[in-house]
Length: 165
Image (cartoon, rainbow, N blue to C red; front, side):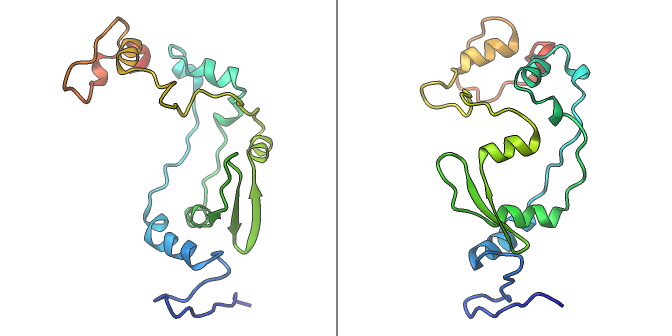
């Protein structure tokens, strides 16, 4: 039996209560998420990154399990998931409804499901006080003390040392 749908007078489309927790979620889906391209995960071959800091970061944080084995996600379901996120709290927890089933998602749940430890004190995303200056970042990527060129907004990756290209 097909799910029931009810007509909402303020919407030009039928409200689909099976797929969306409210009209705003449906509007977000049709106006934003369904038009957004998914950037699909791919296997990360750490041996190809051996001359970078990336393998060390993945190993030190216990993220090796995240480097391979991703199934192809159903695009429509992913878009519905993001459009139905609501009640986001300061600790990163949120509620979401997927195909008329409600979930409470917490950082601990994500850690458990993915089989990775939580990073409790991450410097990222940076705050104003912890943000590295442009000169320090340029020095890191170019391999020697380099002053950010005045008036330049971009630096080409060809000027980076091989480790960061």
